[in-house]
Length: 461
Picture 1 (spheres, helix red, strand yellow):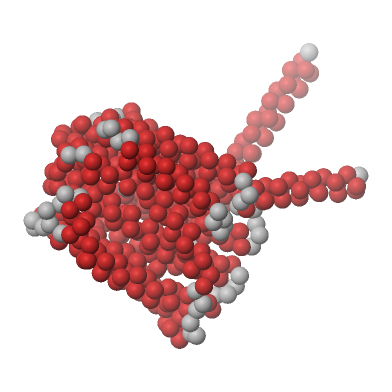
Picture 2 (cartoon, helix red, strand yellow):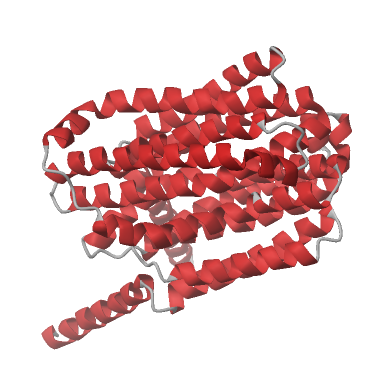
């Protein structure tokens, strides 16, 4: 009997020791995991940037009041929608520079970057001219008295094409720490410039002009770090951009669809509802963007790694799943905070915005779900699985039509966003896992490889 007790004690000790060993082993793997640490650093910088960005939004919201903030929010939403073009520039830059890094064709990086910056400058200049020409029409649609604010928004677009070219290069080169620092710096400068200009009485125009100044400053600093590459590219023989053009069209569509759920609804709210209601909806959307942009660090680190692994023929499904888990934890925690404490919107923006609490509770959950779709879409762009574009475009069209025809109230608009975004994520993940995309082929390849190893082990026995 005593021997049996000793045996049980030994077994418990061995199991406990084994559990501690496994725990130490997992911790050691985590410490050595580049993806985890790079995501953590970029996330910390993103959090700092988000803090600056939301201090900027809070200050502008309080300084302008609900009606002025509604005008600012609708113009800022246009900026976000048009930033899909610059987003495609950054995605294309990161994708192809990652490719040249992975294949050892580093001599092509300089000429690619130099050529892409010239094209980005032309696009930005063209965008600014278009904005100047149609500024009166935009002001009329949004019920804004002065078209000057729309023209100032055009200057934001001008530099918003150049900065993503350099930031995409840093991302593709996997210089994540510099990438993170510059991103946080942009948001900090936006707050400083915004406080100065709005405080000087420039109102909505000053708030928008702050974005232009901050973006230009970041561009200038990033160019300094990339000067060696730009000089080598200028001396080179040029670059054939045909492959980039073929990639950019579906990438642009994806970026447009990713920008719509958190921006198009704000524009529609300003068009369909009165200034007070539109201002409350804008405040709720700002709370939702906190949830949506939290996992941006995960996507920024995942993108070049998934691109490189895909080019080298390595499996990327585990990377996607880890990215989704990190994103779900971050966005889920943030959304839960706003749901549990709905009056936070009033605490942040002031008592005049307390009416946005019920809208914000639904909106943040919708954005938490959409952040998962954001990761899937970025993954598909990274591994060059562009057929996913069809699914994303279809759901975006449905969302627009439902919002346009069933917008009974601003609360109803938030409910529509939640329902459509939930369905979109479910179908997106099913596409990646069970569809004809690269992930399914990798999954089957892993099974075949495992089965082959089992057969060889059986033959040896």
